[in-house]
Length: 314
Image 1 (cartoon, rainbow, N blue to C red):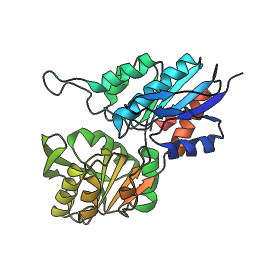
Image 2: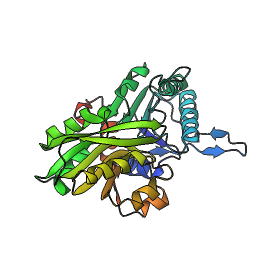
Image 3: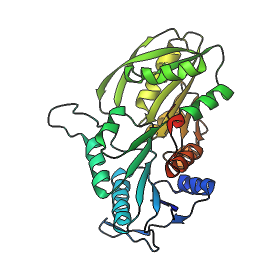
């Protein structure tokens, strides 16, 4: 008889608990222990033989620790004879390094894919991955679902007016913004930026008319927030009356929170709980968190029941 079991590492326990409660599914504690030298150990205390396990773990900061936790838990599940090891990675770390950006550089998104596959995962599900080509790095089933339904619903209820214009922070995000604009029936604009170093970008020009408009920036993640704050400033300098940003993954590396708090140009940042906020970020009224528990719970239920996930992709 088939049975579903949920298991999670230490990266995002709050989200995992909400998903388990929504699905009314049994959970298993992986009993993760970190030794003094930094090594991890996992000991599953109950039988999961023949079970379909859904392992929830974001590879967010500390990225390397959470990645090793994930790999060790997958290996433990494989050796404990789980029937299926469905890995749910709300935020996929190392996804930005998806190609050789220069000579003698690694493609770590592919490396991580290899590690997860070799460890024993049978299926991977993630949300709003940085680059669609990462799906091709896996030789096992891979589902990339989107926060778009959640964001579109919030925008429709709270933000969109006849003055709204959607903005891509760079050329690479235009397709994403065009999708939202079609759903919301709004115009779009783009920020032409030049990257001068890692996590350093300078906004140069606005492609489109934002004078007197309420701008909504849409991106997949906010890391140090340097690019975001620069984009907000450019929009306000070019006549935008309000700037709200949406990003699925609140990476928020230092000094992101300080930049967001001190920026007079960013009115609101809306994110999801693919990554838990720090205490400092949680206290910031400019940041609003929308939960993805419903979307991931539905994805897990459909995967378990062999139903289509197609409606979660759009």
